Amino acid sequence: MAQKVILVDDLDHSEGDDVARREFPLLNRTFAIDLSDANQQRLSAALALIEEVLENAREVKQASRSKKAADTSPRLRGYTLTDVREWAREQGLDVPARGKMADEVIEQFVAAHPDADPDADPDADPEDSTGEPTEDSAAGTAETAAAHAGAAAGA
Image (cartoon, rainbow, N blue to C red; front, side):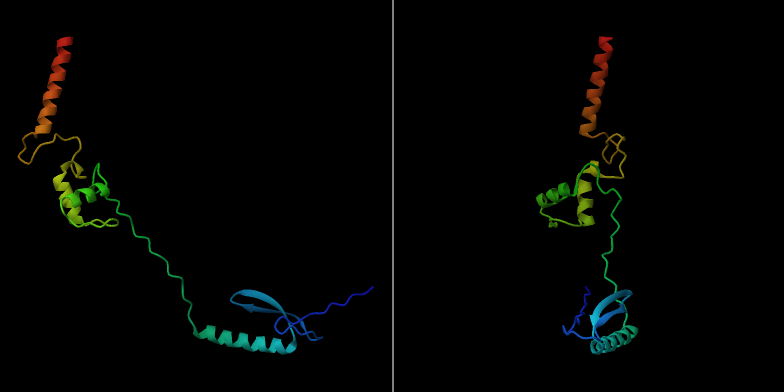
């Protein structure tokens, strides 16, 4: 028994002997659609218009978010920006809740917390600007001396 295939136009849903599968290229892709001869002519005219428009148009690229280079230079040692924000608020300074911290605020924090200075030598003896030992370093030196004296007495 024979079967008859009836193609239906995909645009106007008409049936007819002139309906056929039509392929057409668009934007570097190939599409297929069932069309009558009349709708094929309409499609061809539309594609010709699109080609003309594309010849005179320019492609718009999707804007990309530039990736900002992270600040890899160490700005604080042993402290976080949260520590700086808390200290700054205690000092009555206006600081943002998030985001970039003003260099001036960080410099003031480092001035108030010399141990946060990334350029300071962590192994150097803590001394004040006069070159004299600070109270903390003098106490530490006295404790170290006492420990050495106790070890020597026990030996």
